[in-house]
Amino acid sequence: MNPIETTTTPLKKVHFISLGCPKNLVDSEIMAGTLMKDGYEVVGDAEGADTVIVNTCGFVEDSKKESVQRILDMAQLKQDGKIKKIVVAGCLTQRYKDDLVEGLPEADLFVGSGEFQNIAKILKNNEGGDKKRTFFNLPTYLQESTTPRVNSQPKHRAYLKISEGCMKRCAFCAIPLIRGNLQSRHITNIVNEAKLLVASGVEELIIISHDFTDYGFDLRRKDKEAKESPIELLKALAEVEGVRWIRLLYLYPDGISDEMIELIKTNPKFVKYFDMPLQHINNDVLKSMNRKMTREEIVEVLTKIRKEIPDAVIRTQFIVGFPGETNEQFEELLKFITEQRFDRVGCFKYSPEESTPGGKMPNQIDEAIKDFRHDALMEVQQNISREKHKAFVGKTLEVVVEGLSEESDLLVQGRMSQQAPEIDGVVLINDGHANVGQFVKVRITDSMEYDLIGEIVD
Image (cartoon, rainbow, N blue to C red; front, side, top):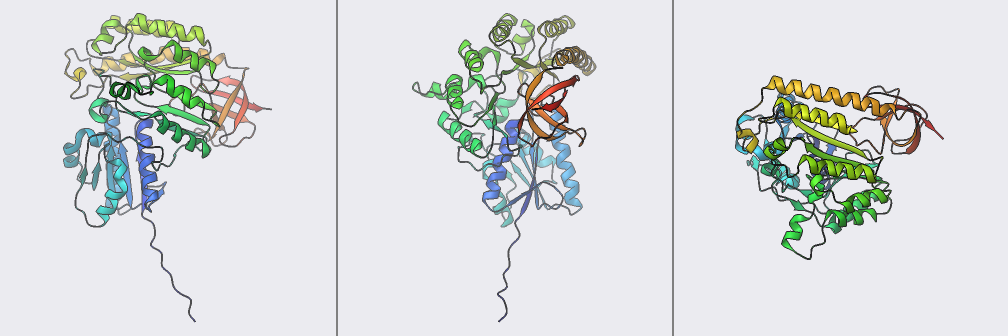
């Protein structure tokens, strides 16, 4: 008797290119989880994939250019017969809709930030002959704890998105136009997802939103009995067993309360890391940016944090070249950075964004001046960072091992609690052995502007 012949249909292969912020990355992880649940295979290489999904960023000019270039790169692969289909998703798609569809005929499907959760259905219908190319809706989707999701990070860490959209209306920012108003997830929902992540091996939860300190405001406004608030969320997350580090990103200074500082100070699960986007320090510029704090109030918050948590790391971001910024206002900012000696500073050259108040303002700054101010600011901060890192030499720190160094496969790299992944420096380990995700003691032997060098000790 001849054996029964069986045939299996190979899984459709999908490759992701995720651009922009961690919040966008979580959307990519949800799309990947949704597709895998529906029988697709997610692959790490674009060549040979049936479909490439480019999850775009539309925040500032440079990110928009990068997104378009990556789409065009995929279009070339498609023309060469190495991939079959291109899906353009994410913020750039949501923001520009018709313009992008008309300008990128190379792409097959366009999926906005209010429809990405339906990606499996969209692809299946397209494969079945559906000719519809565009899928847009209001960005109102909030994930559930049971929403399919594939963690793309090393197994020991994961991002946890607690809300969508933003209630602030900063004059330079297009996020509310792209992502809509603030929508917060319920605490139970967030904590359940945190428990699922920890059960899968995650030991570091990185809490992300557009502004952590506004969390729950929308729910409390609708329901006076709602418990959702930054403080209640922190208390609930602290009760999650098995999590080692909880890192909070994007804490605007006007929402950092005494109680929040005390919780972070007293609970060992919260890393002593404050990511506070200040944007500027001159009161006139802050007012023009529609920021809701003065220099004096910002200094008060910084002073309070440093008094209560002397070893706290403070990371911030500034914008140079905002319309009307004078030389004197920029010099005030430089002096402020020199005085405050922040641990981490990022700097953006102002990018005029259409449909934002800043983009319509007079006295736009010349690009050459923006370049000069950016470089001058970063030079000041590099000197501060170099000096601060020297102080670590000789100390022994707890470090989580991330894997081989991006600079040399002869070195291993890790992070101390004072370093957030992707945005901060690393600890380069040149002696000793450890597995990815392992927490080890590392004695620091040398330092650079952004990175530390050390050896594992018993």
